[in-house]
Image 1 (cartoon, rainbow, N blue to C red):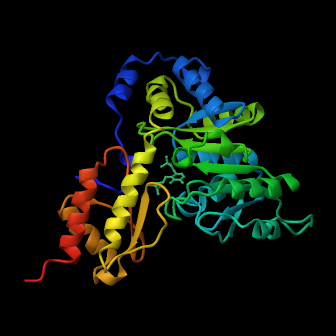
Image 2 (image 1 turned 90 degrees about the vertical axis):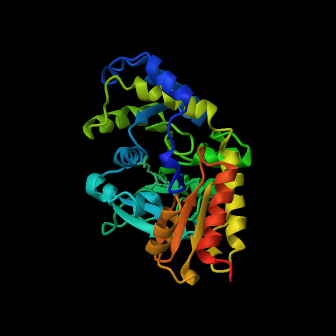
Image 3 (image 1 turned 120 degrees about the horizontal axis):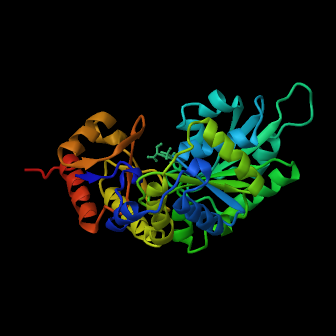
Length: 344
Ligand code: TLP
């Protein structure tokens, strides 16, 4: 099976599995797991923040960030296709009691002038703007890289209004790898950040949130409240450490393969590639194939290729460390066979 559904499907490497077996563990709720401590220290260093916290998932990390930053009744500003808004089941409203206000972005960027207009003034009728959330890479913008300049501008506007900025950096390591910059060059323009260890970096589970010491102390309490305080979780921190320190440099390979895939698909007349492929995600509009999204995905599956629906007429294909050059070739051949069968 060539599984292009997501980089979340990546399985731990041999080295990760060995590290899991050998991990030194303790009760992390008591702060006694040495492997978790090493992971959190390393993460804080790489992310350029005072402290970091190991959490169960990207969704939990984002939720904890919103809960820690906001009060019920606050308004959270986000780009209209942000994962936190689009894909997290309305969790920030359900758990943090905040309301969301979305801003139409441009390939994941929040235009600073629109951001300024969306920030609430001091009026008894208004909710307070409690948080601004950004996302890099931006998933629904097709893995788009949000330029550092935009992050700087957003952070500046936020600081002028004394509002924290949380970065959903589920795929921030893809940005850093592609632009050949340290991850901290991006997190410098945020108050807090969430990064996923279990996407392109290949760990079996887990995310990190990072921020000031004071923030992480309060976040730790929210993690416990949400049932995310785990015990001998060094077995998961150990592969996470390998993911963060050894798997980041190879992410560029995934981007090259995604671009090759997109180029090949562009040659098929019935398909339109709708995103500029900055990183590891390709989004194809299949409207002109005469097939529904469901039908095409089924036909692909019958040929051992998996992708996911992304909209009424779009599908998403994501590269990761299990996808080889020959998988890309084979995927292109299958698309050609399905959509452009040789005329007899
Ligand atoms: N994204 C998943 C699905 O939820 C759509 C995927 O396959 O891309 N932030 C961003 C930007 C994400 O893309 C994701 C996962 C998350 C947060 C949530 O991470 P997890 O799955 O660990 O809760």
